[in-house]
Length: 155
Image (cartoon, rainbow, N blue to C red; front, side):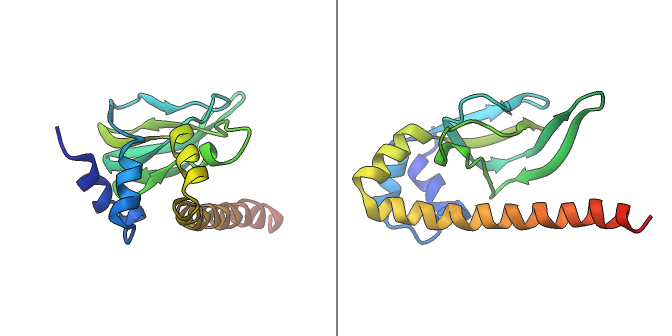
Protein backbone atom coordinates (compact mmCIF):
# COMPACT_ATOMS: atom_id res chain seq x y z
CA UNK A 1 0.00 0.00 0.00
CA UNK A 2 1.29 3.43 -0.90
CA UNK A 3 2.14 5.88 1.86
CA UNK A 4 -0.78 8.33 2.17
CA UNK A 5 1.44 10.97 3.76
CA UNK A 6 3.78 10.97 0.78
CA UNK A 7 0.87 11.00 -1.68
CA UNK A 8 -0.80 13.93 0.10
CA UNK A 9 2.46 15.88 0.32
CA UNK A 10 2.82 15.61 -3.46
CA UNK A 11 -0.66 16.91 -4.28
CA UNK A 12 -0.54 20.53 -5.57
CA UNK A 13 -3.43 21.63 -3.33
CA UNK A 14 -1.37 20.80 -0.23
CA UNK A 15 1.95 22.28 -1.37
CA UNK A 16 3.68 24.09 1.46
CA UNK A 17 1.72 22.52 4.31
CA UNK A 18 3.79 21.54 7.32
CA UNK A 19 4.62 17.91 8.08
CA UNK A 20 2.48 18.16 11.23
CA UNK A 21 -0.52 19.41 9.25
CA UNK A 22 -0.07 16.66 6.65
CA UNK A 23 0.10 14.08 9.45
CA UNK A 24 -3.28 15.32 10.72
CA UNK A 25 -4.75 15.00 7.21
CA UNK A 26 -3.54 11.41 6.84
CA UNK A 27 -5.88 10.41 9.68
CA UNK A 28 -8.86 11.47 7.52
CA UNK A 29 -7.59 10.02 4.22
CA UNK A 30 -8.17 6.81 2.28
CA UNK A 31 -7.32 5.53 -1.19
CA UNK A 32 -10.30 5.08 -3.51
CA UNK A 33 -10.79 4.00 -7.12
CA UNK A 34 -13.71 4.51 -9.51
CA UNK A 35 -14.55 2.75 -12.75
CA UNK A 36 -15.65 4.61 -15.90
CA UNK A 37 -19.26 5.74 -15.54
CA UNK A 38 -19.30 5.25 -11.76
CA UNK A 39 -20.82 8.09 -9.74
CA UNK A 40 -18.51 9.58 -7.11
CA UNK A 41 -21.00 12.10 -5.74
CA UNK A 42 -24.75 12.53 -6.24
CA UNK A 43 -26.70 15.76 -6.08
CA UNK A 44 -28.71 16.11 -2.87
CA UNK A 45 -26.79 13.40 -1.02
CA UNK A 46 -24.77 14.18 2.12
CA UNK A 47 -21.43 15.81 1.27
CA UNK A 48 -19.28 13.96 3.76
CA UNK A 49 -16.02 13.88 1.82
CA UNK A 50 -13.92 15.44 -0.89
CA UNK A 51 -11.30 14.03 -3.22
CA UNK A 52 -7.74 14.71 -4.29
CA UNK A 53 -7.69 13.29 -7.82
CA UNK A 54 -4.51 11.33 -8.51
CA UNK A 55 -5.22 9.76 -11.91
CA UNK A 56 -8.15 9.86 -14.29
CA UNK A 57 -10.87 12.27 -15.30
CA UNK A 58 -14.11 13.21 -13.55
CA UNK A 59 -17.03 15.12 -15.04
CA UNK A 60 -19.24 17.33 -12.89
CA UNK A 61 -22.78 17.40 -14.18
CA UNK A 62 -26.29 18.53 -13.40
CA UNK A 63 -29.45 16.71 -14.42
CA UNK A 64 -31.64 18.75 -16.77
CA UNK A 65 -35.26 17.54 -16.99
CA UNK A 66 -36.13 16.20 -20.48
CA UNK A 67 -32.48 16.53 -21.53
CA UNK A 68 -30.46 14.36 -19.16
CA UNK A 69 -27.05 15.19 -17.73
CA UNK A 70 -25.40 18.51 -18.59
CA UNK A 71 -21.62 18.44 -18.18
CA UNK A 72 -20.52 21.55 -16.32
CA UNK A 73 -16.81 20.95 -15.71
CA UNK A 74 -14.19 18.25 -15.61
CA UNK A 75 -11.56 17.57 -12.97
CA UNK A 76 -8.32 15.72 -13.54
CA UNK A 77 -5.16 14.58 -11.77
CA UNK A 78 -3.80 17.24 -9.43
CA UNK A 79 -7.20 18.81 -8.81
CA UNK A 80 -9.71 18.73 -5.96
CA UNK A 81 -13.27 17.45 -6.32
CA UNK A 82 -15.86 18.83 -3.94
CA UNK A 83 -16.15 21.62 -1.41
CA UNK A 84 -19.72 21.10 -0.17
CA UNK A 85 -18.34 19.12 2.81
CA UNK A 86 -17.14 22.48 4.15
CA UNK A 87 -20.42 24.45 4.04
CA UNK A 88 -23.61 23.54 5.95
CA UNK A 89 -25.95 21.82 5.26
CA UNK A 90 -23.21 19.59 3.76
CA UNK A 91 -25.13 18.44 0.66
CA UNK A 92 -23.86 17.94 -2.87
CA UNK A 93 -25.13 20.42 -5.46
CA UNK A 94 -24.08 18.38 -8.52
CA UNK A 95 -23.32 14.85 -9.65
CA UNK A 96 -19.78 13.76 -10.44
CA UNK A 97 -18.80 10.62 -12.26
CA UNK A 98 -15.60 9.05 -13.47
CA UNK A 99 -15.08 9.41 -17.24
CA UNK A 100 -12.24 6.89 -17.12
CA UNK A 101 -10.61 4.75 -14.46
CA UNK A 102 -9.91 7.23 -11.67
CA UNK A 103 -7.85 6.99 -8.50
CA UNK A 104 -8.14 9.51 -5.72
CA UNK A 105 -7.56 10.16 -2.07
CA UNK A 106 -10.91 10.50 -0.31
CA UNK A 107 -10.89 12.88 2.64
CA UNK A 108 -13.48 12.35 5.36
CA UNK A 109 -15.07 15.79 5.70
CA UNK A 110 -16.46 15.29 9.22
CA UNK A 111 -13.06 14.06 10.43
CA UNK A 112 -11.31 17.04 8.86
CA UNK A 113 -13.86 19.55 10.19
CA UNK A 114 -13.24 18.20 13.71
CA UNK A 115 -9.47 18.47 13.28
CA UNK A 116 -9.85 22.05 12.00
CA UNK A 117 -11.97 22.94 15.06
CA UNK A 118 -9.25 21.57 17.33
CA UNK A 119 -6.30 23.01 15.37
CA UNK A 120 -7.26 26.49 14.17
CA UNK A 121 -3.98 26.90 12.26
CA UNK A 122 -4.91 23.82 10.22
CA UNK A 123 -8.45 25.14 9.80
CA UNK A 124 -7.21 28.51 8.56
CA UNK A 125 -4.83 26.82 6.10
CA UNK A 126 -7.63 24.61 4.74
CA UNK A 127 -10.03 27.58 4.47
CA UNK A 128 -7.45 29.69 2.60
CA UNK A 129 -6.92 26.92 0.09
CA UNK A 130 -10.60 26.13 -0.42
CA UNK A 131 -11.42 29.84 -0.70
CA UNK A 132 -9.21 29.97 -3.80
CA UNK A 133 -11.05 26.97 -5.29
CA UNK A 134 -14.46 28.44 -4.52
CA UNK A 135 -13.49 31.80 -6.03
CA UNK A 136 -12.11 30.12 -9.17
CA UNK A 137 -15.29 28.10 -9.60
CA UNK A 138 -17.51 31.15 -9.11
CA UNK A 139 -15.49 33.00 -11.75
CA UNK A 140 -15.78 30.05 -14.15
CA UNK A 141 -19.55 30.03 -13.57
CA UNK A 142 -19.72 33.77 -14.24
CA UNK A 143 -17.86 33.32 -17.53
CA UNK A 144 -20.11 30.41 -18.49
CA UNK A 145 -23.22 32.50 -17.79
CA UNK A 146 -21.82 35.41 -19.81
CA UNK A 147 -21.19 33.03 -22.68
CA UNK A 148 -24.70 31.55 -22.51
CA UNK A 149 -26.65 34.74 -21.93
CA UNK A 150 -24.32 37.06 -23.81
CA UNK A 151 -24.76 34.98 -26.95
CA UNK A 152 -28.54 34.70 -26.59
CA UNK A 153 -28.88 38.47 -26.02
CA UNK A 154 -27.21 39.21 -29.35
CA UNK A 155 -29.67 37.08 -31.34
